[in-house]
Amino acid sequence: MKNILILCCLLVFFWRCNSSTDKVEEAENKDTTLVEKQNSEKKTDAKWICIPGKSVGKIDSSATEASLIAEYGKDEVLRDSISLGEGEYTIGTRLFPNTKNEISILWRDAQKMEQPDNITIRNGSSDWKTKQGVCVGMTLDELHKLNQGNFELYGFGWDYAGTIADWNGGKLGENHVIGVQFRLQLLPTAEYNDPKFAEILGSKTFPSDNKLFAEMELQIEKMTILFKY
Image (cartoon, rainbow, N blue to C red; front, side, top):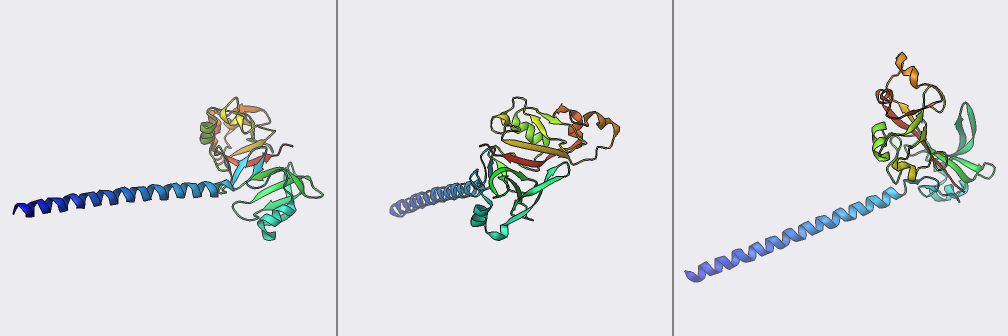
């Protein structure tokens, strides 16, 4: 009887050891899978990362329309008329036309379609974003958090309405130099027909924490990467 009891205890002991080992291995496998997934996501995300002044995904200052065709295929590259604002247009290139990730490219050499001057992203559902997370469709509050403070933007009612003029020494000013590396335009998603909004109309700049901007429910409408040479 005593021997049977000892044998049972040994069996329980070995069963618990094996069970613990299985759980440890299962946890390790889950951790490995999670790390692999995160690394995979990072690799995937890299092709959509914008670095103000330098690059948009794989497109850097050495890019040409011909190199885009070689990289992405003829069907993904379209030469087209691109809006400059204020009713003006020029010839440029649309990459990934008519998709959520479409971008518009203007060239320094518009004859040879070489050396990107600037690249604009307009679709709020696109995958493009800066390393710091700035992207089209981002709200005013989200932008405040990334900048760790308010900033200055132009008033509404003209072509450059809602364009950021100055980061006011905020965090985003370190990597998103306005007018040199970067241009950002916010537009309202709510109606602003009330006469009270008249005070934030026009080409003057206003602090982004103005309560009227909050009521307008501003979102990033357009993000432009400017290339430095």
